[in-house]
Image 1 (cartoon, rainbow, N blue to C red):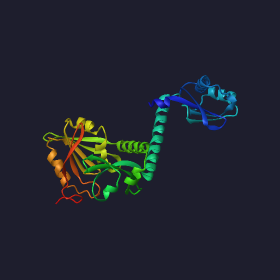
Image 2 (spheres, helix red, strand yellow):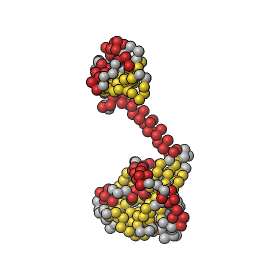
Image 3 (cartoon, rainbow, N blue to C red):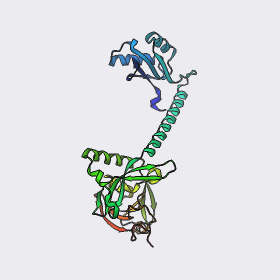
Image 4 (tube, rainbow, N blue to C red):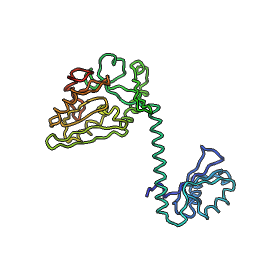
Length: 305
């Protein structure tokens, strides 16, 4: 049973004002749940019953509470969400209510996701520092070669991905608070749904890939997270790691001396990625962070031959 549905939450609106709503709670099965909720409200704030214009309950008021409502809040409208079980089977009623709440939350989540996809969200993006990419606002990760920047990412209804990179000129005009807010927002968006999937080979050892919703979009940017080295080390069971940035959306991790090291290097060198911003690379990482770039795709932005 969902603990949220076994409680009758009762809202008392004051003088029709949506910004002035008092809240009381009582056990859902209580015959006097509304009376108990009103008593709780009165202990916190003395409000004349005559000023209550609407009473909203999670559960249908019992007969005793209906009498109480009619006598106490003569002009108030009363509404509720779930019916009281006429057969007294509260277990089944709670189960139905919990399923209804789950459906509502699922629908709300889908709507929020659709709005986010339409409006776009900030994500950290990796790029190699050369050519026109010097126009991007960025922080160096490894020397002056590998950098992290930020882009507003929009996914259309057809799945087409659009990126609007934060430019250096715009970045220079931002305040410290604005930059901090952007970094926190982008990091939070990246971490939403990010997970390690670990593969174990008896001969090669452990290898993990990182996955995100929406086709692992910008998953490789996880290397910029402060806790990445530690979490990756825990997943692999070694402190010194090799990280393959096969594309901006593909990242894999294994022990630096494992049987996966050569294979990951080959994946990077032959990466077919044509996104343009990031030259696929192999990194050496330990718990202190990124130590160096071990290898890059030799033909830059084109697949190796």
